[in-house]
Amino acid sequence: MKSWIALLWMLVMLPAQAGMVLKLATSVPDGTTWMKAMRQAGKTIEEKTEGRVRLKFYPGGVMGTDTTVLRKIRVGQVHGAAFTGGELSTLTNDAQFYTTPFLLRTLDEVQRVRQALDPQIRASIESKGMVVLGMSGGGFAYLMSSRTETRDLDAMRQRKVWVPVGDALNTRVLREIGISPVPLSLADVYTGLQTGLVDTVATTTTGALAFQWFTRLKMMLDVPLGYVMGYLVVDQRFFRRIQPQDQQVVRSVLQETFEHLDQLSREENAKAKTVLLQRGVRLEHMTEPERKRLQQAVDAALERVIAEGLISRKLYDQAIQLLKASRAQP
Image (cartoon, rainbow, N blue to C red):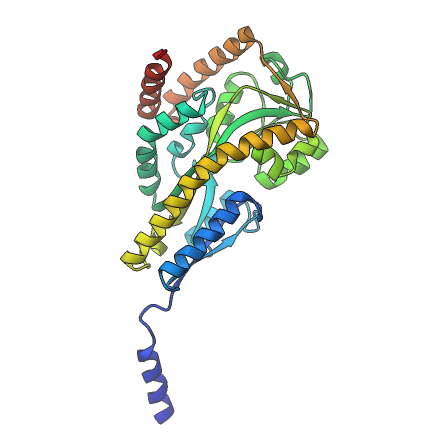
């Protein structure tokens, strides 16, 4: 009897909150700049909360595809994850807005549009039960192919173009302009390039290096296709278990980290482009008449996609107004 009383007394005397470990999955390989920044942020959060909050990462896609990870979040196996906009589009189409083909042309345009639209996209994601702890740009995606003759729309229609599983927006647009997309999970792309299941991908220059896809690629078309956005999200059910003052620490540290990652992304993509060219990937340029032809085909497809609700008319119109004003300036 005395032993039970002693045990109960020990339990009562334990701290009310021993600590919260946020388990976070990502397909980003370990050792990359992004993962190094995340691990440093985790250390800072643990120090500032005196160990009450710790971040545990599962990099390199070890937790499975984005669909699998979302399912694991729902059942509590992991608490959150880093997703691209396309991967998160199963929750809300707004998450992939920045990948809208041929919408944004320069990094200055990206910055201008993000200042206006980031809060709305964040709110859209959070309305689905997630807390957005960070948003950072991964850079422009470019068309890269193991086939060298991929400089015009007719050639693209002969290619086997990879799209991420669940990326409804780009799948729909490609089909509208006469290209048959091949949906694959991120983990299957390298094998797809090896076997010829796909011969063309749209990716950032850093992505082509990090995932080793460049070893199967011969050319890169120097036309920005869409802007890749990454999100770090945590299920609200788990985030609310953290003490309010510690929630603020987590938000503050990660916001600062993601702002730093935005700047690093610009530098890393520029360096990665140079490395790709040094390793034999040839830079190809699309002629202006062909670029306009492709733009017209995509614009027509986007009108149909917007009508179907895959892109928010409100976000699209806001972006177009901002871009028209920006492009009208000398």
